[in-house]
Length: 283
Image 1 (cartoon, one colour):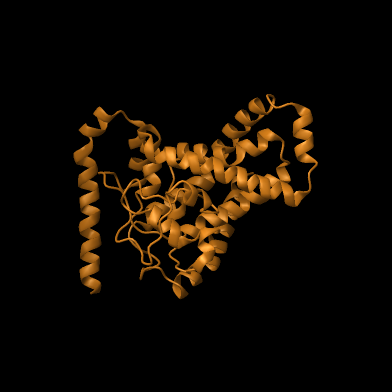
Image 2 (spheres, helix red, strand yellow):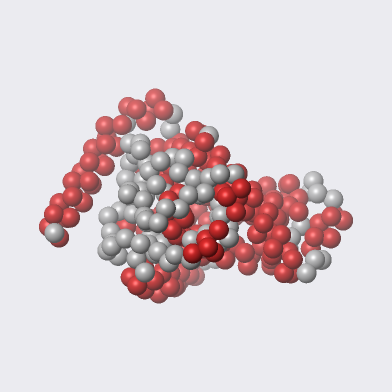
């Protein structure tokens, strides 16, 4: 894809997401929040970074490992999988990826090495459709790989996987959106923003690791959904609140990060003062 086409596709994506999610967030808000809330520019950098830089890298890495691992599965098995009815393939892919991502997501919160990249996503202190895009590229490779590689390796056709990739992408944005649409008993079967917002509570082990359906959280005791929003989002760690810092800090050894700690805190503190000043002026 040339640069002109990429810019056009990115622009159309932003317009589509604005039209889809902003009215929903205004009519059914989980919290009273401005469209240009604090740190929106940082999340926009992550959005643009995904489109212009990291999506191609993620695709190349997953294609390489997918082709390599697919050779392990007998061709007869892959053919049998591919010749199933489309609706059955879709159900199997959703169930398979939900099981894999549940355990992979729990590992992201419990293994320090994985958490150092995943905490970039959890550093967001405001949730909406734009905050869903705050992800470290290495964390994206891990997550997208867990969701899609197993199905590709087992022989599910790209047509089936591509449709579900698009659906999961929109679903991921929806559950991060500043929306509260309680669905009653159905929330046992279907995820929703009210569930995922509690996953973004400041506690690292807040639960709700599942993706589309929370059944895995119910089964393994990690489901939580009080009838109100969390008091605050974010992480209980000092962490830079600028794009370059969030990309670089997880890559550095802890000794170096400690030496840079004051600079990170200085940047964070100045931003916090600015936010507090803005709140006072608006009150």
